[in-house]
Image (cartoon, rainbow, N blue to C red; front, side, top):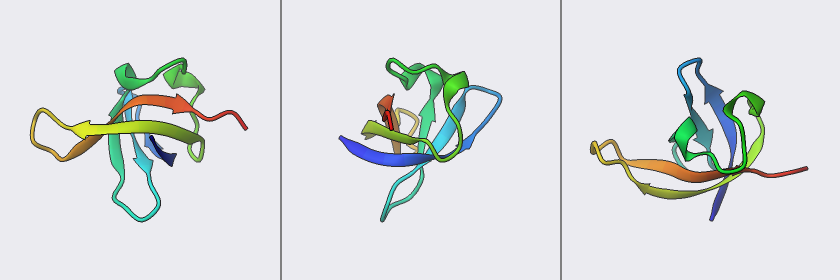
Length: 69
């Protein structure tokens, strides 16, 4: 499972996770587990799995979980 921080959030229900040593990874609110999209803030630490996007746009984050501090 990878870790990163929330880099950007949109009002359309998706965002991007910044991961150390790599490109930002797209995620959709439907990929969240035990986390509400409205509770996420820029800079929050999250864990996630990666899979190939079905539309050929590289990797996307799935099973995104907010790490409790």
